[in-house]
Image (cartoon, rainbow, N blue to C red; front, side):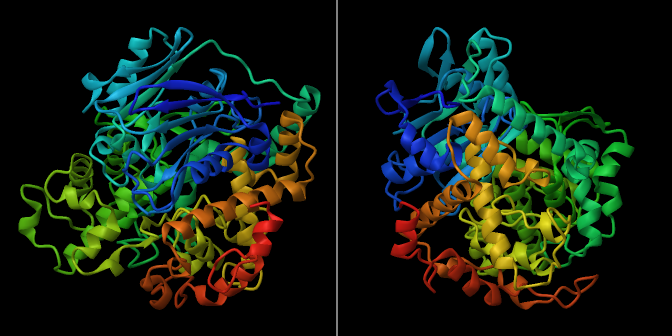
Length: 600
């Protein structure tokens, strides 16, 4: 049936660890992962709760395909209320931790309450217990991981943990697993830190999930692998250059944000792109997560001797072009630093770029930096210094740790923050891609490209080429991408497979694994159910249709140069059609009829 059939509930206040039976009917109604975790959050947590209150819960959730032979079937989600955005947070990570949780025999872990002292959860064959983590508090991600593996006595144990950023409640803190993989966005690491939970170590005998129809599953996997091998993105671009294969593509398309979205092309892109990482000899080998035939991960060693994983496209962009930096060594070191301190690279880099613009405009005075370097565009020293200052809340870093919106707001210029719902935007200028503009604005977790990656359609021609400035078809495409992504996240697979796979392939995998008899349309309706459930949580937490917007700069100031010169994001033309297609009111609220249709 693909589900382990049970989950762990960990009360950090009392120290009790209990095992509960999974509600299989509920699981199949929401698939698992993101969907099931969100349903549990909605059932058990008041959407108005303070994200750092003990009443907020932190849920680690696998999908039914996690730990199976489904291509990239090693993903897991972390679901909670976000301290950065106030929305539902569901942050996805790869590596090997998700598969290991499934092998241990659990679909989910629900953490509730708050421990009086630092603790970690140990899941071994000998038992599941909370242990004292006082000696680990303050340690980096790599040191914590090494210590927990050593203490477990199992060489191939897997660890998810926070670094100093999570401990210090930095609003962009991530949860790291396998040292270089991140459940990065929305501040989930800060929630973990607020609970005094340092990490989780899993080292158990591997038990493969049972499948409803092994023969059908094997055939479905075979077809998926064939398609992944035939697709130029998943078989050539991503394996060869990683996600940084996009640098030159997006830059030449005139939508590569620079100097905090003040321009949209970077003259020094050849110094920092994925090709440069290879040509300069920094890339030592490619690597993949559990069950991954794509292997977009990068094992990198710099001339300085620094080693680590990455940077990926988004990380390289926000510390590079967005900060006006063309130093690939410094960019890569900043990425390593984020991984070890437990910071979301996108939010960290965008926040630094925001501060650079505020300094450029004379709103930050030199004395505010203390002994730190000036926050000038192009400063390699600044991106490294202030990344560390954020994680440790040192000097002006304490203000930066609140994210770019709150930081800019404190200087009276919230408009300089390039965010949606207070979460920093990723590496695509939405003025150049109208579908992505709508996807950014309506994302249920704030500024995000992996809730609906319309770049695939508008720039990479997957599954077909659609003019980036065409308007009529975009609401339907955005809805379809959002619903399918909810399915993929809930199943336990990687979004990158969607370059090669369609809804039919995912449905075949899920049916064979779980015994479901869903049609593709019925599976997509589950994705729609998940999306509407998240929307309900956000509305109850206080968000409104007014939050479905973009920074004023992107709505009012045309791109100044390149192929998208003169374009703005035409969001007002798209939102009414999108709301109508969703079955929502003009105010963006799901109608009673739509909720009844979706079983909500």
